[in-house]
Structures are given as structure tokens and as C-alpha cells.
Length: 324
Image (tube, rainbow, N blue to C red):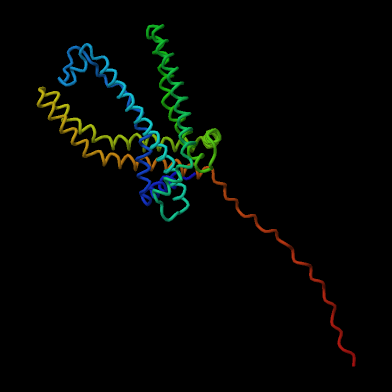
């Protein structure tokens, strides 16, 4: 497989068919919820100053209202997760199908056509990613519980001994991500079922392990991490006014810093969505082209036609002169 051809062709496709940027934005919704549950380190305490309109909700005797707020928050989170899964699935299928059609030199890609075609594979792609995601969540949950338990029973010695094993989970997660990417492409390109797509994705990765690893290093480390860091760099600049307000102290400085940071974030949000959509579209196009290049039948050279020997020329009898 020619890596330069795949990478350049992926860029040509997403630049020519900019409708794929929209599907890239949608596909990003499916992964945007992954870090939503991270620990922010914020805890309520008796000394935490809350606004007066919030403070009365946490007064004694207001348990009913508090549980109502918690229930509403949980319902909103569930709704957002379901919405992200739906939009992410549509975006993922649209990128794969759009790249496949673009690689066949289709003249135009229309959003409505790709959207309608995406619904044909919607439930299978959703089931495939949910199946793998739930399985990984269970496995990682068991490993985390085991790691914490061993650390407690060995007073931290076991945690130090198992640290290299924990570090191996990162490349293992990337490897599973690559298999899942190829399985998604296999499901759409070959119109297979969920289990057949998983088997096909694993077969492609196993058979072409060297090219797949090199492409993963390019797309995950080179394009994904570095590109994502560049796109997210302005976010670090945006939070500076809020941090400045915290360091200066005082309600006015804090409020002003938060307002400025919020306005800057709102202004940068459209740029962030577009750049993230382009990055996601490029990565998906490259993985789709990788699958297409690795699975297309090899072109067999035409065998030379057999040489048929010329029939032997029989010697002609000498021509007798006519008798007189």
C-alpha cells in the first residue's frame, strides 16, 4: 500500500467534497461525550460561597427540590448522550459512504443523499459501536477495580509493580480502535452484519499488521494528537481572562474574567467545530481508503499469449516446362 497516495487522496476528497465536513462535525459528536465525565476536582463544602438563589435550594427541608434538580440533570444528560450517539452514527456512516463514492470519482455528493444512505446502515453501525464500547467499559472497569484492590491489599506496592501493565492499556486501546475503524468500514463497504464486520476488520488488521500499525501511528499520533492539540490551543488562551480574575480576587474581577472568557469561547466555537470536523473527516477518509486499498483484488498481469508455430511449408515441386 502506498501511504502517500492514501494520505494525499484523503485530503483531495475532503477538500473537493466539503459536504463531508458536516458529517465530520456530526461524527465528532459521538466521541465528544467521552471526556464529559472527567473529575473536575470541585467539591461543595461548608465554606463554598453559593449565590443566594442557589443557597435556598440546599437548605434543610428542601430534599424534594434537590432530588427534582438531580433527576432533571440526569434526564438531560441521558438525552444529550442519546442525541450524541445518533448524530455520531450518522456522521460516521456518511463519512465512510461519502469517501467510497468519492474514490469512485462521483461528480457530486449531496448531503440529503448521503443522509438517506446512512440510514440503511444506521442500526448496525450503532449496534457495532455500542457492543464494543460496552465490552470495553466492562473490561476496563474490572481492571480498574482489580488494580485498586491490589493496591490497597499490598499497600501500594502492587500498584507500582502493575504500572507497566497499566501503560500497555493505552496502545491496546488504540489497537482496538483501529480494528473498530476497519470494522465500521467493512460493514458499510461490504454491507455485512455486525459480527461479520468485526471478523472482517480483525482479518484485515491481522493480515496487514505492518501497514496498519504505520498508518495508525500517522493518523492517531501525527494527525489526531498533534492536530487536536493545535486546534485546542486557543482554548488555553481563552481561559486566561478567567484565571486572571481568580488571581486578582474580588467578585468584579472574577465576573469580568469569566464573561470575557465566555465571549471568546463563543466566538471561537464555530471555528472549533469546523476545524474538528475537517480533522475527523480526514481521519475517517484515510481509514476508509486504507481498507479499500488493502482489500481490493490485486491486478494480475495478463499472461502472454502462447506462441503458435507456423505450419511447415511443404517444398513445392519443380514446375516442368510445357512439352512442345
